[in-house]
Image (cartoon, rainbow, N blue to C red; front, top):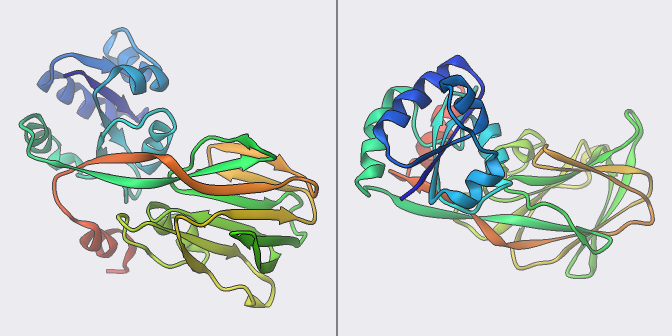
Length: 264
């Protein structure tokens, strides 16, 4: 069993990472934590291929970056600002790693999005594919097709297509609903629609989505990859055959909504 270890570049994350390294055998270190420890390091892509399981010490951003490079199961310890996607807090880390080592966990699979721009495949999205106006302050007309049927013409700043996992991220901030991660569904949420005439909708994940734009736009995949889109382009989005896989110790989704998303 080989373990990958990826840490957000912060002192807190590196200190936790050092402790975890001492608890495991056959550990492949990502370059940042490896440099901190004076050891040989590997890229996220290399770890995604070589490791059987991956431990992440960081926040949601570090998780999304890792998911760009692997379908291996990941276990995450929160050292980010919110850490909605993470499994445990720093004070729980050592006991949690012991449980994972002993096999006291289960794997939760979550769907991802696959996008094609003019037939060219883009990187998968674990959270969302967002289409933004390329001209700040200028309204954008988007046409949304579901299974080839024109469903909405949207005037606004853009449009978000999110997975259930992404429903608690960017899509939530523009008024989209929260969806339990195990469901096979997509959220389609307009960004600042003119006169609020375009409500968010939820569709089954076996539907095919097509987007057309009237003016130049930007496509953002999980906030990590940016592409230009012109009025002559066609963006298609479907469910990816690849999934995000999380090592889970407990079913804490609804508790996490209260702890991370509620005003207390």
